[in-house]
Length: 388
Image 1 (tube, rainbow, N blue to C red):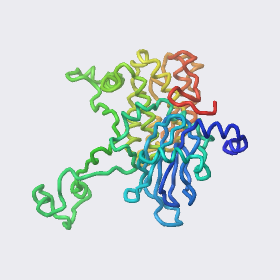
Image 2: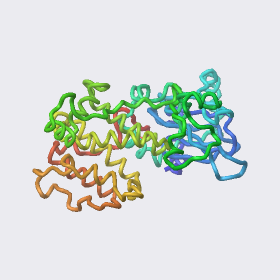
Image 3: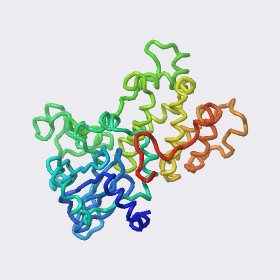
């Protein structure tokens, strides 16, 4: 695809003037730099990316550990909401080894953009459809709502101890043994570890998911029903943050998946699993939120295609998260016609073919929602590529 852009001067000229540009200043040679689904090793002439489609993008980087080496540090990045012909400037911070906004330099860089053309790499349009499929519901409002107050997405969270414990008197006051005291067991060693909390402003602002899935004062029968069908918990999640706009829940699901898949944030993966579990086990909510579940098919179809088949296997129990989540009445309704049911059930305890799972999702849902709602568009209103 990139070769096609270089071979068509008119198209390249149109993209140059209509697309946005991300100017990156001061990035050391050897750093791994990426935008959305693609990444490269920075060379001596690199100054950023041009011809970027308007919309939401994720820019990320990993510092090189040594000159000429292949090992890189933890990934850090930030979401950008770009408009047509916008010039967005970022500058490398050597101390924190991450990119920061440089708004004061954007006006001057915009005037000199043509002179910088030789130092800007074209946006990788061979992966643009994949990125749009993974971020189709993530608009500017979702980014502002979910990203940390600091704006940075870091693979490793910055944490601080809840209580001071560096000095001997601090540990004595908390009835903790000295650092050099031996441990009698593994459990004792774990108990001695300090309680940590994320540094203020660095947490991704995901919706707090309910720990209790049934109403207060519920009878044993009601508790059992609400634990089997999580529609009550789903209603609480929607009412807490997405009242009147349940579709925005899919933006959070995609945001969490991107932060894990590309940003390497494990906490985002755990949130994605918990949110997906609630959505997939809310049988009674399907009739009320048909549009939400029709679009959930689209989201899961593209997400599962990016996951290795054995990724979700627990190496200890051999339990598979996708198997237990997708094998429920939401995805395999008993009243669905046999021709619509999954002909290859997802029952393997150890492995699962994610492409097969994506196909089964589509077939199982087809008995619940109109057929025209099952089409998988390549783009969404949130993000329209320039190659239309």
